[in-house]
Structures are given as C-alpha cells and as structure tokens.
Length: 144
Image (cartoon, rainbow, N blue to C red):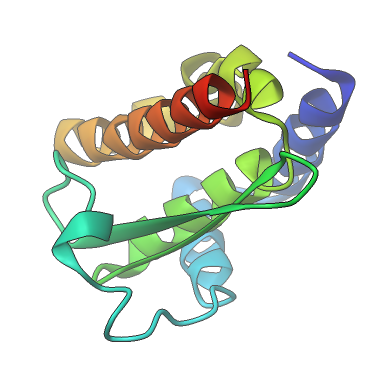
C-alpha cells in the first residue's frame, strides 16, 4: 500500500477505535453514509449498478485530467451507504496503480468490518471493491 493509503486506513482505524461496541460502530458507518452527495436519477442507471450486492448500489467513476480517479456512489440501504463512504475515502483521488495496490480485505479486517458484516453484506462490499479495481485497470490500460 502507498503511504497515502496507509494514512487513510490509519485515520479510519483511529476513528473506529474511539468507538466502543459494534452498535456504536454501525451508527458511525450509517452517519458516514449520510455525508454522500446524492446521485441524480440519470446516474442511478443500470450501467452504474454494482452487481453482486443484495441492495441497490450505484458507483460512478470519474477521470481527472491528471489520471487520478474519483468515485461517487449511493445505495438504498443505510449501512451500505456508509460502506460506500468508506470506500470513497480510501480510493478517490488516487491513480489507477495506487488503487490496484490497495489490499481492501486486509484493510477492512484491520477495521474489524469483515467479521462484523453479514456474509451477504461482506460479499456486496467486495463486489464494490472489484468494480473499483476493474475501473482502475481499465483506466490504466487506456493511459498506457
């Protein structure tokens, strides 16, 4: 992982460590989801939908002129919106190479999220990560 990614994980870990039990952490994740900018009806399209998620999830990938990628997203489920907010914090503003270096599973295990999520939510989370990785791979291929 890059130093910038380590900082993002470290900041999130520190925030999670301040919270006591999982009920508090779930509330925090839901609160993070409330910070997401809403998507337009047009952006909630089939093309932006993430497959493999039990709830409705949309991810938008935006390319910056400097080659970095930004992500925006939304879901119809509060906890999933929070997971999207965490993913955006970890992945947005990075180059495709930096994105592809991130070991999301290890990071989410450090945060204690993998064990706390249901199998269905965990699968959905990693479906979102795979979508981000595919978009980063495509952006890297276009640039190179």
